[in-house]
Image (cartoon, rainbow over all chains, first blue to last red; front, side):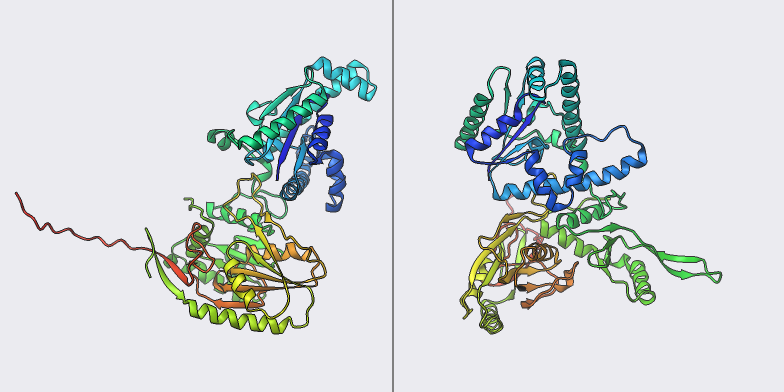
Length: 328
Length: 193
């Protein structure tokens, strides 16, 4: 479906422009109110004020980790919600990193609304009944939040003009005119096809998607021992299967004093399936040691379900998904 | 049977074997769903289309045909690598009997997602029919109520299954193998110098 994303400086009238565009195009407007309403059904509406277009700052390390975990869950939910919506509806998305979320979606039109500080001060003073000094602080704070949000979550500079098809200055154009410009730009884009390309490959390589880092079911990003394990974790993530990386070590042999001499930690645990998965990319003739450990594990812990994915199975998976195998 | 380029095709299931099994499945499913009102047959795009069409011709019960499509791992351009519905159902399945038709169940990852997704829509019942089943590749357990053929762990094409969008239209199912290039020594026959 069609997507128009609108990013805006605080006080530039971007919200009103988005509303007008949605009205003219008869698209669904995805703004603060709409998201908040829908997030109630996901049980994370309480997190909205804390994380919506905001950066995490000025807190201690332990608190940061906890908050970051919560935020990742919040962002994953909201981004999935928006993506799913885009499959069914034509959307006007206000803020929330829409320009990055749909950066590689060819039909999308990305718009930035800006205005000179003087104009924004006037708008904010009038809209919120503030004096100029307070309005200036509010503008600075809001813009910094949005800028940091885009950098922290997606690794993009908010003012990177490569992200936008169109930048409109509402210090020059009125809000109604800005909306008309967007509607016309969308029409031109629909008629002429997608001649504009996305960012160069080098830029894509540089991007740092905090939310797309591989995370386990507890929100931790483990250090994988082998690239194949990370690829497998991504596969599980893709199909929304919860996993934990090496969460448990099973003692297998003990010496006469009861000290553990041999133990085995399967690579993955899938809590919903109550299943351990061991991934091995070693050649078949070299896996006998691992097989021996797994046989022993099954003897001592008969209730534990474990599945081994051998090198040939793993390569079969890669072949199925058309992925090239990564080296050590 | 030969293939093209670097691949070779070896027939695993003939057209006759497939058609006979599809007929058997059609009879069994028709018996099992006899008397059921509002049955929706959901075919998973795109691989199961050939099977679903042939199977539907063998059903003697009324049903509604619908399709669902989901994105595949490795083929997404989105920054968040999460499976998505690329074509949703046109009909509501709430309180209706649903019969999901897959081309192949191997790891169970796709089917596990589809079952979870469809169950959130509160169908009256949900059963799974797959043309091919590869239990040897299973990662997550998924229920399979009807299966055409259980096959060994190999890469197969034909009857809807593809390799890079090719071979779907084969009427047989074939194992796709890498062709071993034979090094032929060219013996010159013409000595001119």
